Image (cartoon, rainbow, N blue to C red; front, side, top):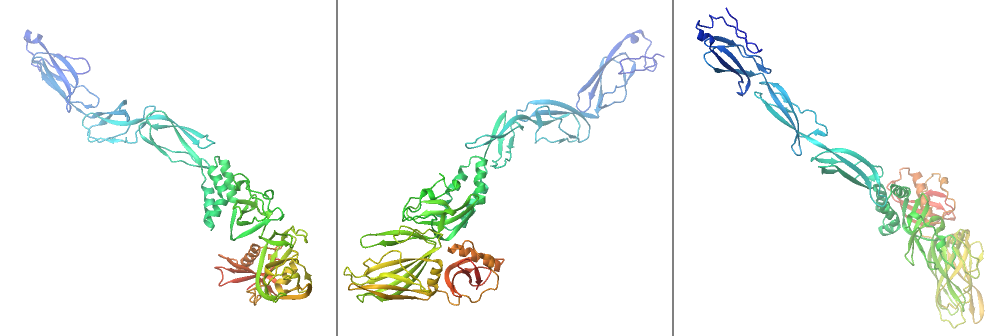
Amino acid sequence: MRKIAIVGGVVMISAVAGALGVTNSVEAANTRYTTTFKLVDKTTGKTLRTIKLSGVKNRTYTFQPNKIQYYATPKAVKYTVRRTGTIKVNYVATYRKVTIKSIDAFDHRVIQNNTKMVKVGTTPLIAPVAAAKGYSLSNSSNSIKLSRVSKDTSVIFKYDQLIPVTVKYMTTGTDARTLGVVKQSVRRGVPTVIKPKNFDGYTTPKSKTMTIVKSSEISFNYSIDKTKALSLYNNDYDQVTNKDIFEQAMKAYKSKIDRASTVSDYHTIESELTNLKLSEYWEPRSLYAKNYNSDHGIQNYNLKYSDSADNSGTAYFPNGLDANYIAYLEAKTDRGDYYWVVNQRTQTGGWVAENLLNVGGIDSLENGDSSSRFKTNFVYSDKITKNLSQIFYDEHSSQASLDSIDLFHNVGISGLKELVAINPGDKKAMVRLNFSANGESNGTDYLMNTPRLEISDGQSLTPVNAMKQELFTNGTVSYLYVVTDDEADSILLHGATIHYGIDYQGRNQPDGQINIYGTLFSDSSNATSGMSDGNYSGYNRSPRPTTDQDFKSIALLALKKEYPRLNNARITKVIYAPDSGRITRQVWATSDSFNGTKVIVISLDGQVIGIK
């Protein structure tokens, strides 16, 4: 017996001479043929490997297929050599190759290829490979689940190239500067949202959606966040009734908000508006300078302005005796308290320091004799007028009348011949008697000769405006008396008597008189009835209150003590009224916290007497 070994690690053939059918003929023993074995993928028909073996004619051999990775090894193949021939051996795959392609999502270039073997007949999930340097997996690329695997296949994953971008955060306006710089990467060709950063004091701009294909620089512009200041301004605007006056008074504030180009500038005006406590007067208030001089009026140098309240830092108020100043708004600020006043002659407006002005009005009187007469102004804090129409007769038996009496508190006046100048704050009042006559003048007769005003204590007062030489037998004439606060209270409460002399044919008849009876008040009956029993001693005012607004403030404090939850209190009027033999101020008020009207009775020195 003979063994034949075909070496090569592929095929081993063993044969016994008889078993292989070998003849004894020399020809048969020497004839050889080549047999070619093709190892083929059964599914695809692809030749995996080719092996050639030489064999003796008519002999039978056994071919043992060799192992191939990822394929099942077939059974051995027996064959007899007859001639040169080819034998196909089918291999069945156990694994298949998946090619994983990475491509650029923008221009579709292949970045890299990777492979993976998967088991035949399965449905594997193929995940993308790690991105190459400078790339990031596209958001649209996810793992891919294959259908039942039977042959080699490929999958594609897209990757975005990362593009460097410089983002700058810039301010606008005169202080344009860089708030910050950030470098980042974005996906090439992919719409990307570039978000701004937040910076204190600035309004954050909107995000930008951009498609970037190359290295770029992007800027965000920041403006100062003026929301709070504008809200404060608008809230004050909504609260006032006189919108035109508000816009005039607050024009500079609004301009500073609009023009603020740095956070520091803006914070300054925001702080001023935060600390600004603005009040609108229910009724405009007449004002005059505390250092009033009737010869010069209100001087520019007497006025002080808030730099924040006027664009130029100053405002112009022309001089003039006939200038009258009306306050519409009051502002309590961190720099002090101010009035917004308008000159009624020039209609010039401005903020004036409150401590330079008194509240009141301006009036005029005539002073002089037959050869010289002129008018002069005087100022006052408040005025009371009572219409009387008390009839009397002059020397011709023509009817004349005392039409009215005016009382002015806290006066200021200068320029009168018989009177040293009086400044507001000297606690002086003035009484003015207003007459009219319809008589005939012959050039020598007079309506009155030095009328004297006698008050209840017997004191007799002489007018200060020296009208005794005036020929006022026809028309109107006024006499002015300077009195103290106590004398004014006496006249208001008890009345007075006017004594006068009438010139008759060259003789003076000295004892004509007109009696002014009773109080000058209405709404004064039963003034003390229905008083509350609360203790109001805590509501004294120092210095002495002089204006309606002062008494309103005292009244509101008293109401808040009486009604701790006072809501929506409204003052309807402030009047003079007698109480227990003295003059008082009565403040009438309504509120949602009580029914009807409450009257707060206050002494002239600011003591709350009670509430009825």
